[in-house]
Length: 255
Ligand SMILES: [Zn+2]
Figure 1 (cartoon, rainbow, N blue to C red):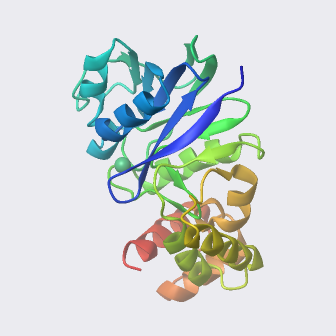
Figure 2 (figure 1 turned 135 degrees about the vertical axis):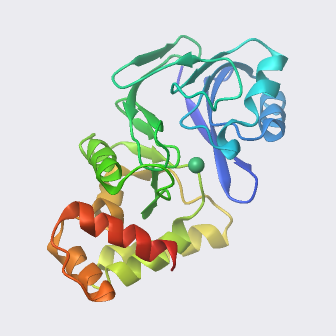
């Protein structure tokens, strides 16, 4: 049975990804129960599993209500801020779901929060707020060293992976990316594509890792060109990856 993966819009710009086989479903980061309940009802699906990437309210606030509807397994990183019962998973763990049939590996990606995790298999990456298309999450809790090391883990996954980000931030991220890398023609080309999609109200996601490696400046802080632009913006010397990431993140925070 092939799997359908669909973005359920929530709040202003969140996507709650649902994976289903026509009868059973998994949701990732249900920050709001209502739109998920509606989708389950419309498509006559049983929710078997909830996967959580990190503790922020817009990723977890729907969990208790969804678990109250029918019993389902909840997987999340160990963090006392999770307001529900769950099975804790950590680096290298396999999450084996029988319905729909899905086996995902866990990778720890501190940076946006200290206990953030992502889930991936041979085809797809569910990256929470660690990675956005053409951007990355804000650095609320981790250090630049941690965030760079987390992004490098994701960069080493197969480039063909579909990347399921949780926010529709792509156009504003691309606008910043253009400033960070004015000579990067891939960024401009993708901006045109995404403009077309968004004007038809289509999501810009999923992306692919291969595309992100070309258009996402936060995955490119090891490159001399990006370091040169960051140095120029801050009128400083920046010739290493971690410092470049920190200064790029700071630049984006006030963009
Ligand atoms: Zn978050």
